[in-house]
Image (cartoon, rainbow, N blue to C red):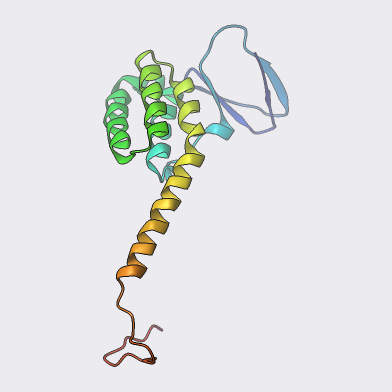
Amino acid sequence: MKIGLKAGERLFINGAVIRAERKTNIELLNDAVFLLEAHVLQPEEATTPLRQLYFILQTMIIDPAAAGAVQDMFHLVLGSVKSAFSNKEVLMHLDKVEELAKTDRWFEAMKVVRALYPLEASLMLAEKNRRAQETRQTAPRPAPGENFQYGPRLAVV
């Protein structure tokens, strides 16, 4: 497998970090678990349930020595993520992630999780819109012709 790297780009292979000094191609001649820098999620980007799960999976690839300890966290978070979703498609894919994890196929599991990002975003947006609609429906409305509400007001400066 050939991997093209730009100058300064990093590649994570079996826990080792490789940085290209200049544009280069690397050919892997045997099986190796690798992760391109472009697919690495920073901790501050793990803001949704699926991104948190992805971050844990990537940790097991980047630091295989810690994978055993991180696996417990993975299973705990996976259970929480499964309980956070009721969408059958998401749950079906999370079952696949669980099966891949049982055989230490972290990279394949990451690909499945990453592919769910758009669906997660649309589900979260729909939930946000639903809550906003509920709030609008339950908020008190002024009587017809009443433009002002009397009472104490707070000024925002």
